[in-house]
Figure 1 (cartoon, rainbow, N blue to C red):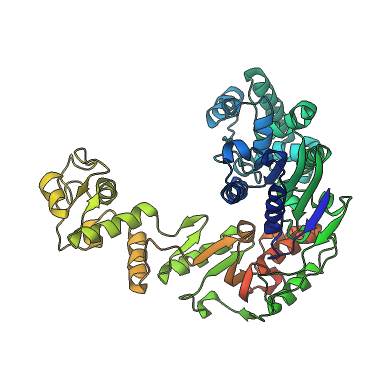
Figure 2: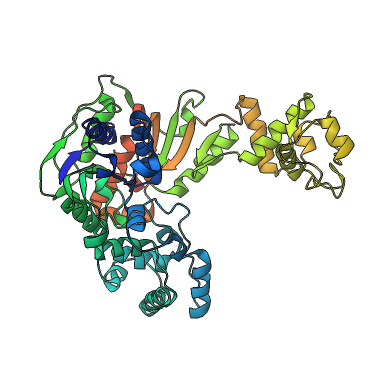
Length: 505
């Protein structure tokens, strides 16, 4: 297995994709190539690139451009309909008298982290032990789960019995079955490419070794300094200790020199790492310490505002709303699509334009029956979604009582006051509701793989992170290394008032 170490912005994924291109140009059949990524999005992007460039059918010619989980699902005897669903977890909960919040992953093909790990402490603990290939008792003893061991053990046994009796499987069962049946279910490849290898768990490394055995040549790319998923079972040590050749991509196309200095100072604190160096961009960029985000002009450019823990961003999100900025937060736009379409739709109607029935329904959703629309018309029963209608048409035929002289805040009287104030601030600033937000507020974990010209990094540590700093300091060093290296131009460091609770950059 050949390792490609890709420091931030050096283009490790591009390197792999270029190698795929070269293989296809050399005449290797596309179904003799496996490209495995951690997200369905990444796998599909690689598939799309190859299909467009070489005029290939993604479904038949690029069968093995997948995630590890979807490869396991495709190659084993497990069927999608036999995967544990939310209803199955409810049925199990009722039978054992303990509520389990398990769900079938909304995107079955994303490898990290699993849905059950995030939703339910007991199921998450069971799954984590399996991914790490350790006993449940060992993982329980190391965890902070405030649930008696007898309960955890009982749920584990009941969970296994239920799946066996019902002929059902969970997310991790796919991986375990692929390993167990690898002699007959693992295809032979000329080339295998594996991206983000630093994030593989012990169980996934077993699959990687099976793929290596079944491939004439295997390349895995990653960066141990960016391994921030140990809490989800990732085992970066296996990537560091992997036998075989290696290379390090030496030129970052993202990191300016001033940010590079900060990043290298953080990397040097990591005890367990593969030694490597890389070159920054020639541009110097800037690193600045500030007391508060309010000192920054966020009106231009693109921004990432990052924190170690999600709750550190709550005040940030509140301030952004107060100042009328459009932004992404927790994976969503700061103003919901339905609300923004309703406001824009109403103002279009006032200007004499038509809107679709679908937009009109969104407008009506924020209007009071009996005040702004006649009772019985709330759901617009006589208007099709694809049908277009004017303001006068809504008044004449669909029970609208609101009039042209009412602005959006008067007409849509059911908009909550907090949202009303935010929309007013957005309009005052001149933000367009349908624009792509220039600002994203995210945890550092959520930003992995992202970048922005301007990065604001909050150094606050949660109590759990403070404790972790004493036990596994490498984990926190890697987290802040990832945060620092999202910056393409400027890095702004914000320390908390209590400097003792900060990560020292």
